[in-house]
Length: 141
Image (tube, rainbow, N blue to C red):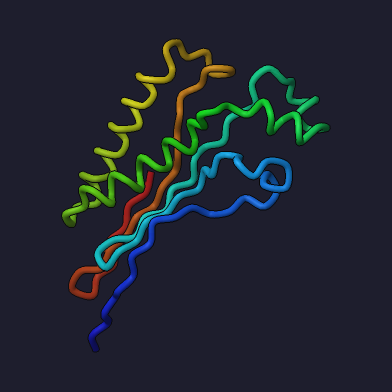
């Protein structure tokens, strides 16, 4: 049995809650797939800047207005999918390490002093897989 994959995707998932209030809200969930590999990255959402948790919980439009831009979660998730798209050669571990290194460089560029609240490191969770000789290989961070 031969399965031929002709899929090539590079996109993001819509966030219907935030788009109700802001059509330009950062899309922090990213994915990429081609005939060799598939990867999904979910950027780790940050707290809004300059607004308390209590106030943000009660006022979604203000929370969205105060959300960090650029979104570190979006940048980190994009970094993972872009790294796979440009560099995948059959070794998931090596590409995940490279993607993680690229996210570290993003943090060095944008987070000059981390305080874990207003200036917290960018991050994402991600999963990737590919099939070779009828065996599914996968990795995640």
